[in-house]
Length: 263
Image (tube, rainbow, N blue to C red; front, side):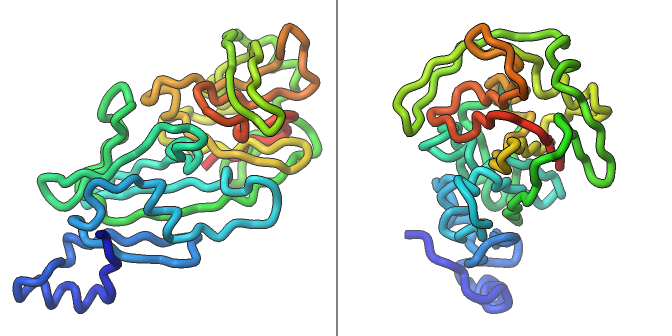
């Protein structure tokens, strides 16, 4: 069973004398968590990233489903980082797991359901949890990256090239099926002057302050479309809806989107 490596200095000393872990073997889990921890590579092999993050207890703000605001950055020894929305890898929501595997050096993170190895991280060293505090905007749709902000009116979004999909998911009201039509999230970001690279985390926030995170890699590498729907079941929407196609539950289908916070 996996246990926590207590004390990095002790672990290094033990490793030098034939113990269980060396400095290069240790993976640290930190950031916005109540229970930061360190693990040896051997302890993590076979575990899911979502499980490891859950055990470190992300510190969540009050509100409905605020765990959907959590993103996780995984960094390897070569300083390569990949960011995931926690909900994507949650088996009850996105059901698109990321898994630790024994690697050539230490432990690697892989995503078995991806189209390619674009999100594989070799020799993982750190797992950093981030919880977004992005709020709703007075004027929709505000796209923010750092200090830069651009507002794209819903009427403009409605005239962008659209894709139409059938969305099926479970909700508190029971199974849902909707026809959603709108531009890709990547296209909306590009229009706002944001380079839509796969690793970018985006938090969509509705007019009521409800928010959920996605990453563009869910579509470009994971093969699951991300839309900002402007028409639902044939009826134009006053404010767009985030559509993370493939989710089992509807928590990330954010309605009435007024803000997109990037990064």
